[in-house]
Length: 467
Image (cartoon, rainbow, N blue to C red):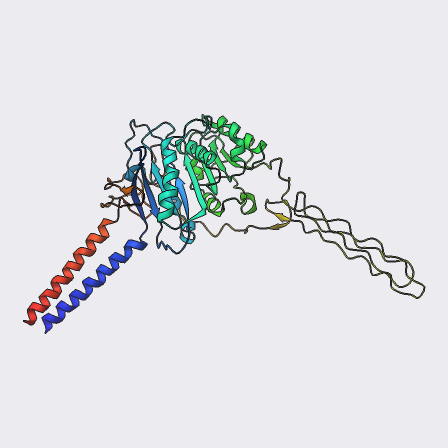
């Protein structure tokens, strides 16, 4: 009997462990590797999708596309383990990810020369295939496989990734809620394609490409757009290394919604930029924002109209004279907050006139500090910022923290021609954001199978003992 009891207990423990491991397959945060082959052209795009912890298909999630930079190796021979993370580890390791979990799509390029796109060339230039496949896979595979909010798609990238960001948002101007091209120029001729988009452009004062980015920003503002431009004084081709980890960056990006102007929901970023050491100051003569011609200098309402007119004279019977009429309030257009209208003067004769009712201008809604009106954004950015993952020493222009450890094996089969990636090689570099780089989710299934077999063995031993 004692042997039978031990066998029964062992079988129960094994079954519970197997169920636990299988359950973790759904909720465990992970980078999932994919390989897409275009049926028409045979062109291939490998990409990682980061699935946030506790993913619930019943909810809608934001997604950021991260385009990595080039490196000094030709051919680059990138892998999902070595280049399929980029700076997403830094974005994940923020307090914001705990309250507003995000997906990330990180494609990898096998070229080193504007592989994602080149926005300084005319838009009539054929689109780079890796940039085109990134958007095709995002829309046809990723957004159909996972529960993604189409109003909360974001894109960023440094250097080569910044060039691709500019090129993609000019070719797909109604797709992304916000874009943050870093250290990359764009053509001023495409200003009309950029002007209605939420853009936070980043560059260094002595970056070799800085003038190309300045010219693009100037042209967009002249066309009526309102892009944010953060230029770091004295910095070269490294501006994203300070801005990406800055506590202002991630909350600003994820506050944006498709078709909603950024200045109606968020403040512009301010210096100094504290994402790395030493802190970076802004170039004095390069304004972060500049109200464009088609927007008012102030985002508050127009001044209120004058108050009521003087009351009329009282009658001989001593009746009270009527007061003045109300002044019209301010309208939510340009100008400062509505001025208070003056009341009507008392009527002459008889009893004292009741006086005009004071008009109060509504003042509109203020979205820029100091312009007046009620503030629509919170005074706090959401609490103290947690530690930022430094990711170790960066040696290539792709930058950022990478996930350590050995990628787990297995293949993942995705829809519409996406097949699971091969087993990832061991990742090198800095610390991870607590998640492994995986080409599939085979390991949990294998472990569960072993545990289940052990349970069957224990049950068989129990039956044998009874005989």
